[in-house]
Image 1 (cartoon, rainbow, N blue to C red):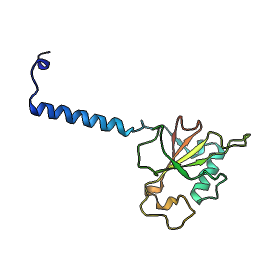
Image 2: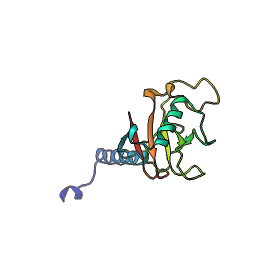
Image 3: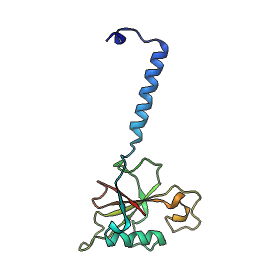
Image 4: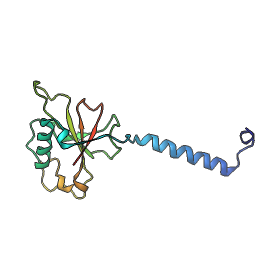
Length: 145
């Protein structure tokens, strides 16, 4: 290949460095691939109940409901810290939290006015985005209305 034998000029190095930096930034963001969707009626009944609790603002059955979900697995779209909150979906027949969760993404348009309420959907741009996992964050499906 003759083009590989020619020395790179200054502009060639600049283009190469810019392309490398851009590809590294895209890889570092960890954007999740597009997630399959599911309708609300496809959720298990316990997940539909959890979704109703989230829409009402609680009360939640577990102290850890509403905590920040950090997306360490990078299975959800990249977002700033604090964007995602997680909520327990009860699993029949077990006494602990189990593996099922609903994760809510919220791009806040204004701060929450009252302390003690972890998430107000009316303060989320477009009402928030909802994801369901039945396998403790190994896979997600986006909940669509």
